[in-house]
Image (cartoon, rainbow, N blue to C red; front, side, top):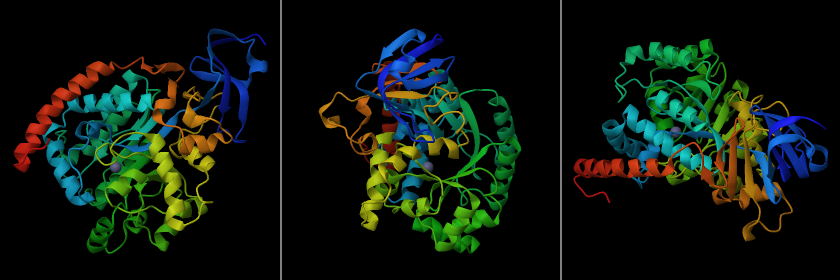
Length: 447
Ligand SMILES: [Zn+2]
């Protein structure tokens, strides 16, 4: 076969996550102009002419991981507030956020998060934070695929945008990033208690007009459900459903506390659930009924949530917890098969975010978001079931190289687009200021 490729991977175990769940031993993948142009066995593809041929023997080559829910900017506040339930924890966190959330700092937090995510094999994420343009620009600079967009709150935030201007500002934001190939837009009100019913509906219209995903938090804690019942006389899911908020592509973070009626509404709506097992456990929020969601064909993605609550952006740990939790919770080791967990962070995750024809599978015609996992390690030897390895044995240090849109962003464990030393140094300097401020607020030393 004579063809020209930019990059040709040879000899990997290719875990395609395609519609037939094909796995190719001694496999090969060719990439040209950012697109996957051939997938097959080494013997079929090794004659392809390529600018660069990569020996991928003893590696898994698979789609990059998709983090379904995160707050990149919160990486600046990692471990600042600990050991509180969600509501008082948020109140305390927001004091520091208000003091330090500027465009410049959010950009720094995003770059920190991107270093961590790329190193660990994550190639896309759904991010909600102040100054979403700072996150989007940092992602473009890093060559990372990001779903993000305007956020909405009813109170004045650190971004200086007046509440009544948020929709208009959001419209301009969506226009501005419309042609960015690495950015996929979403509209993201924080939740239905911090945004009024009218605000939620305006956000839904904004999303639908732009053909964008709608992303919000829903039913994270029992306290939230109680407050929603008190204020609106119904559960968060019923509230969103009755307001028409679920009409259109929707992603709901958490969904920990759902009634039978909520389950029916959720399943009918087609909305995706963003499951954050570590954050839910650490904040004592509860255990989302993920196995039940899968039984109802509700799309589920896995996320890390912000590094303030979970406390890192490691998708491998999140996958492992997602797999284990349902089994322990329901005392049934047949639940959440490993392959299903891998689908959530690749093919199914991409589909739920509207990226199913773009990424999430190793298939011809898709963009080349690919990761190489080094199998030459005691904890990965032997390997009889790659899916079980990916969920229960692989860790972020096993990720050797990461390609996004056909370009290496991590090469032999070295970041190629981000200056990690500079980012860490800037973050340490800022952390000193955050520490002093937090101590002055609390009247105690935060060390
Ligand atoms: Zn969140």
